[in-house]
Image (cartoon, rainbow, N blue to C red; front, side, top):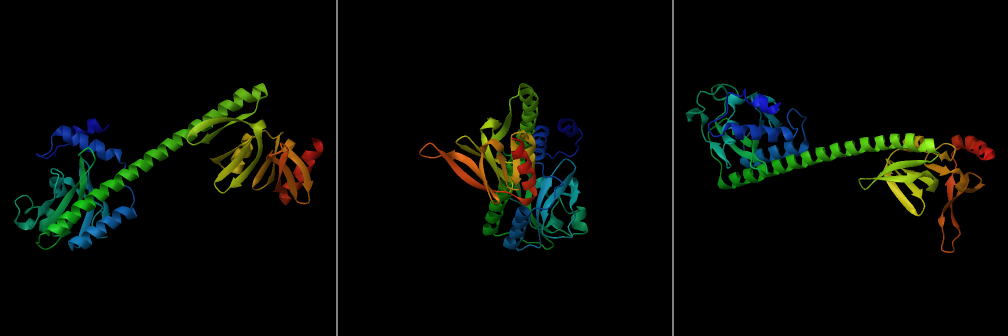
Length: 318
C-alpha cells in the first residue's frame, strides 16, 4: 500500500515533510498517469513551452518516490525516466513558483550532478510546479538548455500559464477515468438487474427488462414495446407513448426479449408480433401509436430477405 511504501523513502527533501510527501504521492497516484502512453494534449503543451522559452528540451515531469517520469518530452532521445536523486524537479516541487537555475555547472546543488557533468550536459533549467487544486506538487513543466541563460519575465509568465494548463488536462483526464469507471459499474449493475429480473419474472410468466436511461435503471414491460429500431451504437425502444434511446446492440437486446412475442424482421428492426397489422410486398405495417382520432398510426417497416421466411412461418403459427 502507498502509505506503507512511503515509510521506506529515504530521500524526502528538506522542503517537504514526510506527511506532505505522503499526501503528494497519494495525489499523484489518484491521477493514474504514471507509465501511460503519450497523449497529444501533454505533448503539445511541452512543445509550446519549448518554443516560447526557446529551449531545445521541454518536459512534463512527474515525481514518484524513486524517480522522475516524463509524460511528455520534446527530445525523443531523452530517457523516459531518471533517478529522483538526479532530478532538478525535486527542488522545484518544494515551492509554488518558478525554480530557475541559470548555470548548473556553477550551482552548489548541481555542479556534481551526473546530468550536468555528463550527458545530457544540462546547464540551464527552469521548472514550474504542477500544483493540484489542493496545492500538492505532482511534478513540473520544465525547460532545459545545454548553455547558461535566463528567462524573460514574459517567458516566466507563459511557463506558469502552461503549467496550469497541464494540471487542467490532468484533472480532465482523471474526470474521464472516473466517469468511465462509474459507467462500467452502472453497466455491471444493469446486467445484474437483468439477470435477476429474468429469474424473478420469467418464472411468474411476467416479461420485463431493465434499461439504462439518463443514468437511471428503468423497468420496462415487454408487452408495452411495439418495435425496436437500431441507430448505430444505440437503439430506440418504442413502448407505449414513450421512446427510449439506450446504448446497446440489436443482438444483445434481442436476447433479452421473449422470442414467443418478438421477431427480428430486418437488421435494423425488431417488432412485436401482435402489433403487425398487415404485410405489403417487402414491408410490414406496424401499429406505431395512437393518432389524434384515437385510431392506430401505422409505420411501414422493411422486411430483410434473410428474415422473411422465418417471419412468415412465425405469423402462420400465431
